[in-house]
Amino acid sequence: MILLSFALAYAGFLALCLSLDRHHQEVIGGRPKPPRVQALRIAGWALLVLSFGAGVTAWGWIMGPVGWIGLLTASALPLAFLLPYAPRVALALGPALPGAAICVLFVSALI
Amino acid sequence: MKNGFRQSMAWLHTWSGLLVGWILFAVFLTGTASYFKGEISQWMRPELHASAAGPEAAAELAVNALRQIAPRSNTWSVGLPQERDPIIRVFWRSPEARRFQNAILDPVSGERVDSRQTRGGDFFYRFHFELHMQPIWGRWVVGFCAMMMLVAIISGVITHRRIFADFFTFRPGKAPQRSWLDAHNAMAVLALPYHLMITYTGLITLMLMYMPWGIDAAYNGNRQAFFAEAVGSPPPPRAAGRPGELVAIGPLVAEAARQWGEQGVARLTVHNPTDANSVVQISRGDAGRLSMNPQTIVFNGTTGERTSETGGDGAAAATRGVTYGLHLGRFAGPVMRALFFLSGLAGTGMVATGLILWAAKHRQKRAATAKPGFGQRLVDTLNVATIAGLPIAMAGFFWANRLLPLDIAARPDWEIRVFFGLWVASLLHALIRPLRRAWIEQFAFAAFLGLAIPLLNALTTQRHLGVSLPQGDWAMAGMDLGLAGMGALMGAIAWKLARRPETVPVKRKARDAAMPAAAKSA
Image (tube, rainbow over all chains, first blue to last red; front, side, top):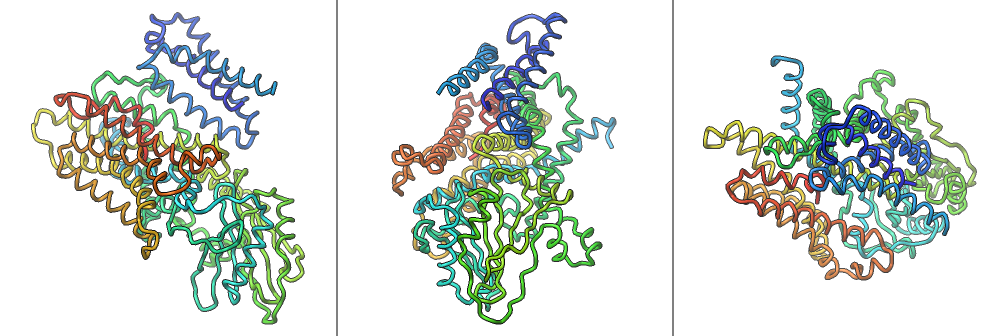
């Protein structure tokens, strides 16, 4: 669940980051059209809310918010430093991390 | 005041940050290391092994040992083994001495341990808020710097023009001061909640020392009375003067463990152990709860009857307890501890990049006039001696722990002398070498010290990686691997710096190392 919270935070930040002209250009190319900006923003915030939910599920209401804020930092820093060096990797991790986290959850539920 | 509000805030940010930056770097780095205080202490006392015995057995062992060691003492205090610090500590005060004496007991046998004498992780922990000065002076200096830090954070947020547009911006390819500014911003903004929290709660932990006047007014200067009421530590009972028999301690500890859980029982204190009026006080630890406000159960020492309980938190006491707890992070499990550690490193990196940014900006401004001025030289030298020098000193502290002879007198002091000796040497080295060479050589040396730690441990103890990994001895293995990882980071920075041609200004090269510099530490 902690891993999922981290992955969702990363994906959320990636969506918010792509809604900005500079990063959209750098990662995908071209300026995003207003509808796309809107969609990315909504997706980004929604993912962050989900990430908060996962954090609270993992740690409970007292520790959850504390840990979640730590996860926000832990997910945003690698994203910011990955962008200039490996933009494609940064983009691929967006869906890959939550996918991996969900797989881990499934496997651990089965065992 | 300069022209506009924003300019004056920028001015405030620059100078409040620069003046205390070197101390803040040291406070941040040693404080970040202190999240692993328990593990550091374990690594530095390799002779001690963990025990699986519960708190009752440990408490019985400790009290029996104290009957032998300090039969006439009027106060015994015992720190029970904790998951991350699995030893028994006993403290006692003999009638003639004013200060407490202490010893470490083996949690299995209850024998006094003759492990190597060391301050362990406590050295970094105390240094973090006392700087190894007279405690009262050190705390005031650190408090002043923390106050300036709060000023720098707030003025920095106001100064930052495009906080949302530049949220994820890091441009390693641009002009040096641009890239340093990006790195500084990223580490500051992306961990901003942590920076605010840690600075503010840090001030709160020592608020009663910085501003005692409220208490003095309300309690007519009787601070003891305040602490008894606020923190719930009752004054020690008076001895009856008649001999008394202390009850078996195990059942009392078991009762506390039923209430708080086995790991929850952390300390016990026995007042007047051989008197008819003896009192046993059992206190809860910090694991698994956010508040640090003490919780205690008090027992009558001769009957074993439960007499009172403290720690039903009032709102103000609970607030202080939670802020204190947040700062120390002792509630945290392994993952959350790692997150705190990462944020702490971001803070360390933020201070470091801020200091380097000042130098880079200044150098560019002065580029027309050939010679660097005194101020520039001073800042450059202090930057090297702090940002590269402190990691060297900290790594050297670990080396000293393994290499100093075990029977040397005042061994803990010698470890500390090695620490400061290396730090002074780093300052001298930065003074005599050209700037660029100084950075490269010191980072390379720090890299060597860190990377060679697992080897050093293997040569000097029986608990090297070949043993600790298969046994799942994570404190030992984690320290070896973590220190080696930090060494690798230092090496990456040195390599980045060295690879660039001489003609480019120094700061420019280091800039690419800004990413590893984010996680700079020793």
